[in-house]
Image (tube, rainbow, N blue to C red; front, top):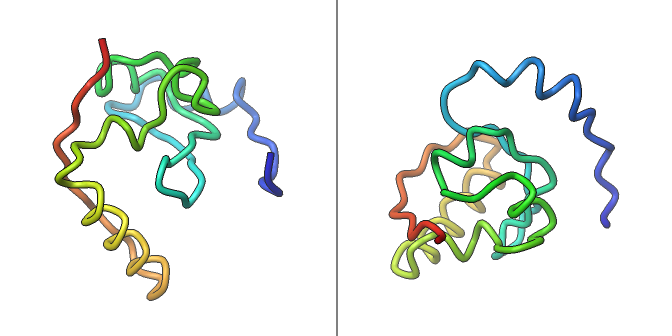
Length: 96
């Protein structure tokens, strides 16, 4: 693992369980390896959090449509470099 601080999943789960969508923390790499994913990932990606965290079954990056991957990478890198937030719409392939 990297130098990321530990994530308190019990506290996070309690706080995030009622939020719509997916809350996550991932590495800044092309696979977008998940360090944490809320239970909302199941509805969004058809993958459980256990499937996604540490790429146990599938990487989040592999769920992004190949036609969107370069744009997603470039937009996130640009936002990180400028310190600005980003919002992306991507075509997800889903997982079955």
